[in-house]
Length: 102
Image (cartoon, rainbow, N blue to C red; front, side, top):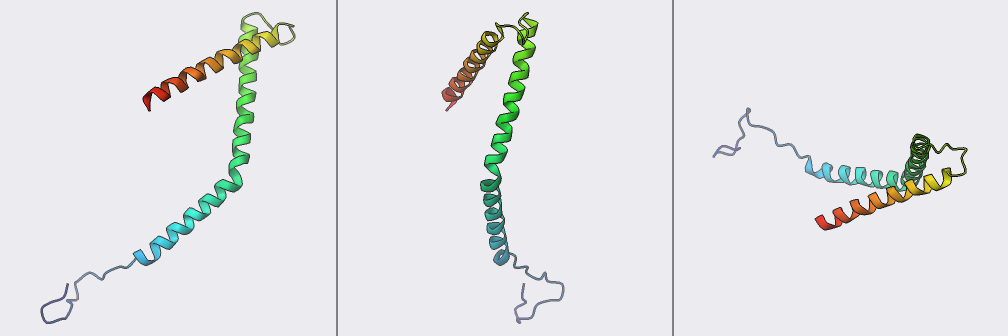
């Protein structure tokens, strides 16, 4: 703030100009994030899907064994297929609920 005579008092705050550097820095960070996502996204997605498949197979074994169908049984494949159908029905219901909210 300048006084009427044109001088600036010593206690006046010095304006800080960060806008001229802030936008390019944010743009550079955004570009780095996009490049990282493009480079690592498929690998991370594949690892997540693989982990989900391992967990589902373990759940299949646990549930089927609780129902009296061990992994070594001839009926295990049918039990696991039935569980897959239950999961698919559940996912379809969730998707239907989500679509009704849109």
